[in-house]
Length: 408
Image (tube, rainbow, N blue to C red; front, top):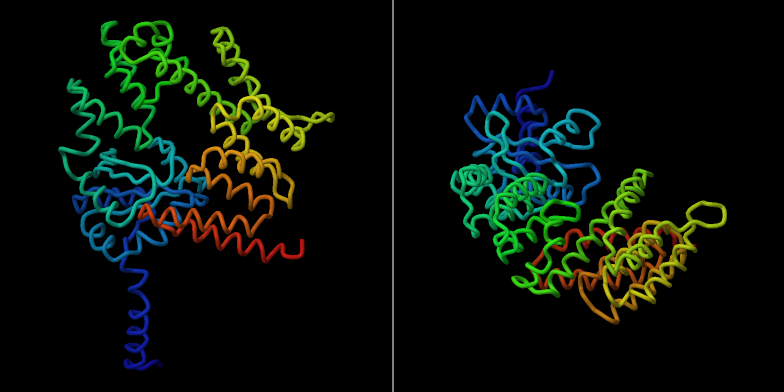
């Protein structure tokens, strides 16, 4: 039989092991239990909506939630809950219920399970605590803003803040619904006003929506308040982004019905840039003589398209190179993508483009060059006082791949 001294020694050793992992935020994993605790302790619920594949989610779990400062604050103020939105069970249903569209989504619920405040994306410990303070402030949180909006406050400064808050937390569905309803109440002179156009930009009203259609039908009024160049570029870029989303969804679901039907409507509008956009999207539908997707046809079409239109819009190169990176996965299989990115960087050495360059490099097994680019990305992050944890992991990933494929 174990002696009391032995048990105490074992207990002390266990306690000595626990603080590193137990000092952070203590999470529940059952929604109903969290609700019961919230009612019993009269607390709000902090929810980390995450997925198994989300990089920022893993970073938060590994480096933010375990911090003592985070644990001291959140364990005292909230009932904390983790919900995995790709668990094929209750987590998926909760994600649908709360309309979670980005990960991580960090949400605060009242004790009855109603959303009080939320945001999407990773945060530092300080940022997380600041978010929690906003969530618990009845004068600042999203619920208060929604009540104020529904109460009739249409001051432009408040409207800007309201719609920014919704879009930043990926509540775009509500933002668009509220804006379109608001837009419908305006007089013609107000609809074409510069302030209204600014709100359209915040909400990102897209093609075929009532407000966007109105702008297309009354461009002359908007030219006077905003300027022709701005309106024309807004319309053109909106269609490009809109069809990118439809095309990506169609390829993912193997159903291009909606994309094709909307392209017909787009063609009927007779914009001068229709042929350019149609040619761009045709690159993604690159099939060989056997009727199957062919990477070589894709690269040939991509090069021809960029030769004609690449200098007009950097996003063409970024989109085509990213897709090629997804497609390739062998040594030198997608070399054209590397060339596309190097030509773009020579023309516009934008640090934000390095992510795509890094991706296409390592996907072609150009590991040494990829690590050079990753070091540049890391240096830029340091200059911006941003975390380098994710970049460090990518560097280690490339090192591991280099070792794995060293004989290829």
